[in-house]
Length: 326
Image 1: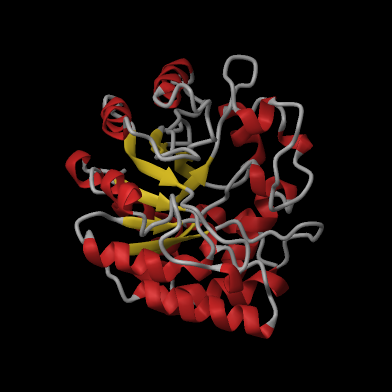
Image 2: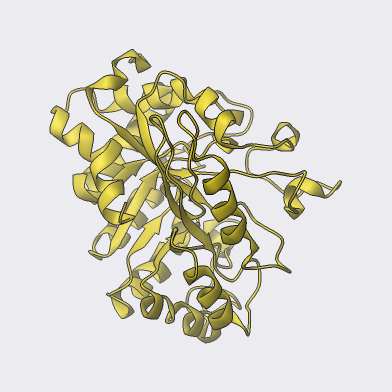
């Protein structure tokens, strides 16, 4: 596998990472004693503070100059609290050698400083009647770039239905989504590939809103049939020019992150979406459950090692800068 030692050939933007301070803030999935269902299985090791110095330690040896902080499933009773907290973190960690942070859709510079930009949660776990108030609250932060949402989703392709409450074709959900254009927000969406037909329709109906699929549309089923369905779904989404994709979240429960397992997924994603709409992301500290920062980024590098440096820079840096307006 390619070493992270050649990381100095160009700067890196990490467009998907998380911070949390469990001594100050309430994240139900991390603070409550009863665990939630989690796609990587046991996540108890994540129940600790994770702040800029922790990120810089994990990313040691990589030339990361900015990051995008993704929402970390903040207290739903305080839907505008996360951007306020991240503004504080950005100020507290503005000294040289520290990271300036960004919430979901926040940008962070991490070389000597990390600059924080935020994308925050839209409709966290439920349909909110006060969504415009929430979005207006997010917009008060200069770091905010957009929102992330987990639309209602079926557990498997055979169970997928259209029109479910909280899904991307639910009229109430769409009324909330329509407000993103008003605030100039992009939309990070976490949904399994068997709902990308609804996402493609959403992108077609709201062409002015930039959409970013997170975690490679969750290609968990690596059987021939599962991967064929995943590729076909990506092709449907990629036909809409306002959809981009983050190559991240490729771990599987109980298995280490390997180039053998993930290299074909990486290359297929790039071939389907094209060079200008793909970005590599760490999903740290969550993906630390499946591999170190160096293993994951070394795998990304190795998967595209035959491409010219200009193309590699697009995937590791330039596309994220453009799409997240960093």
